[in-house]
Length: 215
Image (cartoon, rainbow, N blue to C red; front, top):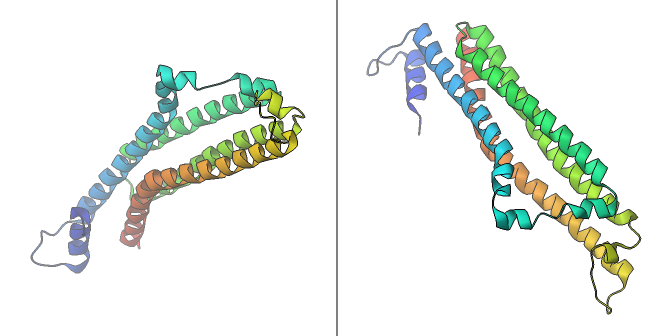
């Protein structure tokens, strides 16, 4: 179903008599308002995504399940800390970029500049999603390497099972961690592309329409 803007743009292009005719400036203002709204939602979602893990940590049952000694026992705690700091720093940078894009788009009155900002926003979102997914894979990767280099992984995990060969159990656990990393990254990618993909597709439509108007 076409939304109101699509109907009005269709009228502007085909000059239908049964719908109100809009000028170039009026169509531009509607596209500008919708683009500004989309970028604002991208900014809001990035903040929620950043804060959500910290809000979950306030829940005692969730906090109790977090075992930070595992990384230390594997000797990878410094790597995890370094990756976490990097993740925080870059995430804050991207959130600032989304806010900056929103502020820029909110005051634009030039179609070509708006097209440029829409293009840059889409590119920023793409880079942000790729960064987040890469960080998830790196963190899982560091844990997998740490587990592989641990010669006493079964003892490190305090697993007591006399009927299972320690080496077999070790590689079974590594395999489970690898599959879990792939599945979790895939799930996260689906969520990212559902949320951010939906919003960037709206920006893409606005960009295409602006390009037609400027042709």
